Length: 131
Image 1 (cartoon, helix red, strand yellow):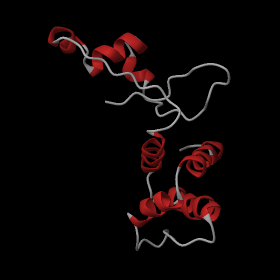
Image 2 (spheres, rainbow, N blue to C red; image 1 turned 180 degrees about the vertical axis):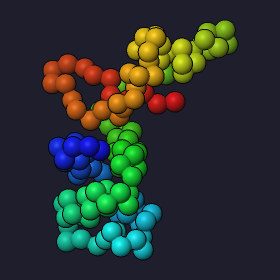
Image 3 (tube, rainbow, N blue to C red; image 1 turned 90 degrees about the vertical axis):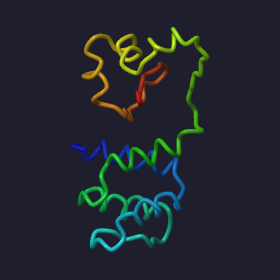
């Protein structure tokens, strides 16, 4: 996380998508560290003060916060496609093959910025690609 605005956006997503209990559970994973405070007056302070301090001090890795958002969002506004394929077809639908089809030859470079938290208004944007 290199920019303050990025952290602000991530914490805003946590506020919208996660419960206070989920945030507390994440903070509890590092309980006992001097930069961790679990109790808060309300959910807003829990996220804006406690979680922010934990991330800024690098006590909680930002990837753990993204994982929290992803776990909370799994049942959210998204499209997940499931296919049944014959064995022959299933053999070519590997993660790498699909990634090349979507992102091109340099697919690894294309997915290094994921997960992407910035939305594209009135359009679509691939925001994550996970194995």
